[in-house]
Length: 212
Image: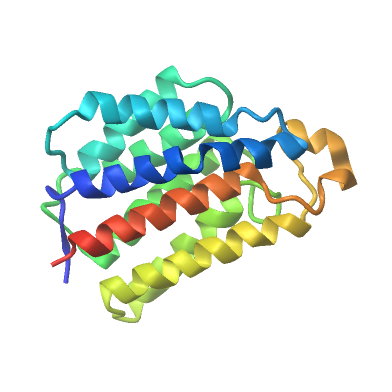
């Protein structure tokens, strides 16, 4: 069971729609311990991508690369370069593949995480999107090694994303604007971890619908 790389349009639009639908929610979460613009900035980037895509078909890796370029170059704040790097490195890891297997998808996620590690100091436990992304990488890599069904693995990844997101609530922020609050940052979800959960969940849903 594999995903044809060429069938990327539905996956990308699933991600765009999820961010658009949750822009206010992300802004509200960010406003509790940050500057409140996370939802607005993310929505701007994702909707810009949707406008430029228009009615065109796109492969999954091309879509990730195009979205990443927009986020990296045109979106303000820290999250544009962060997500831009993740998506572009994910795309590069499988750009020549006609079919995305579970193993290849695990390599894509791992490449995105490693690319992120190259530009930020945050690691698991620091109350950032790393706390959502890293468990998802682990989940998919382990599922691939175990020979798990692709769709079943994606459902498990969604659970891992939610668990990772929720784990940030009890953490103290060490990076970004919220780190200035120290202990007062505890008790609130991290906005980046939340948007990462939304994105990976929508990505999984789009992939499940597209897998033969």
